[in-house]
Length: 370
Image (tube, rainbow, N blue to C red):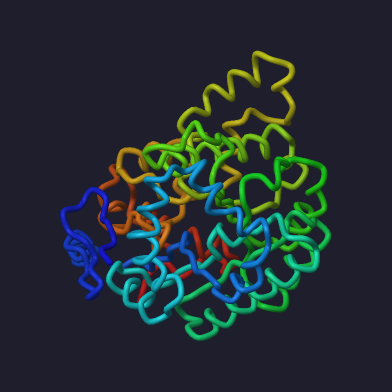
């Protein structure tokens, strides 16, 4: 599999060649500890639990309707056969990490295994299987892998118990959730107990959408992912801000995938609404001020886009994220960070790893490799 290096003429090959831009970066400055917070794994045993369920059997038809036949066929023929070995094989994962210059991955289950339609008993089995498997994976390489678990957020009381078990018993640093749960937005009172417990535990909530609510409007050109996923993140973050979740729970640690979607780029419109309309004046501060309360990954592809994200949210709120091992990932991480204008050496080191370590509860974080 060739990991596409956006903005670079080279690729990190399966043979483990480090990209030229990354090698040049490593020679030109001290080697910053590099932590990739946006990485996925899949737990095959879960598929055995759901394979006969009507909701699972309905997935192929739903995907063709909302993603489009061309995208589904490409995923089945090319993307998934290339990604699946890396989602399930530790040796390939470590080889790719070395090729990219990644010291540590923060591994979360793929969004396709949320299965928020599952009833209480099935949801308990799914989450237990995912979390125990991921904890075991990380235990095999504790210096290189950090785990984020799954929770059944369609059952908030169970999800709160699962969150606590995940963090306190399995040693994970948080969980991954989607942008909405069975049609409920994340500021719905249904989830209030979960948010309160997450804030008390001080663990990370990684916000990663599954698909989009735009339906068949984006079922061509892979727009379900290209356009739909960033929109879902934008809407979810907006609900957390306007719905007062971040006011009620200021200690929450939330990191948004895909650079936070479109919200950081157009936050001025949210600020204008806050000042111009009473129905949008629902929280304590202007929306842009909450961006410094959230974290965002670097998956915006170009140095110019990353520079703008940093200008909007602050260098201390940005963490490295590649979306490993999918084809929409960006893997020339050192080349990308090196190409961003105006960053200090300490800011670069923070984005590459220090910010993530602090966010994950490792104090100030070990910034430089020895």
